[in-house]
Length: 115
Length: 118
Image (cartoon, rainbow over all chains, first blue to last red; front, side):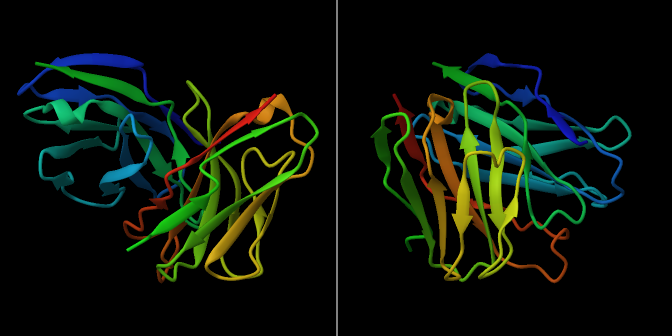
């Protein structure tokens, strides 16, 4: 069975600093997708970034980048130049192969950005 | 654009009562999902549907039923609510890909429905 692990339940980061959120996954599938979502205090789930297991380059979306290390089965999210609005819960998720788009989520990491 | 809309947003039930959560999407997506979110556990899949008239069980289906009579709607029912079903429920949808497991195909989520069972 697949499993997503986020080992950091909470983190504090200063404004303008970079922060790395850890995510490891366990799968034996040859093909899979990795996602990060942001959940602010208002509760909605916001898609941030996607990495396919066969993608040659690490994904980037604005201030978000995904440090994908396939052999180590890790997909860490890097947020550069943190802003107060980045304070939120962040979820790592994996879509296994042939899963009809279903996502499996980690437990999440709460990020608090301080001035 | 409305995207994915869930109703109601909040509900309080007594043990044993029944209720239905409605999810509506206006993006013509084929796939729809119901998740529940509990503290420290992330989101867990309850049921999902890959098209009108189809439903399938997810990770935690017990105590829930679903129906997808129309492509745009996905209903989640609790026949006899229990305190263990106190949670925040999220509906999500996804466009159909040529191959379901390929490509970004991120899930689009509704705003969530907070259910309390006393």
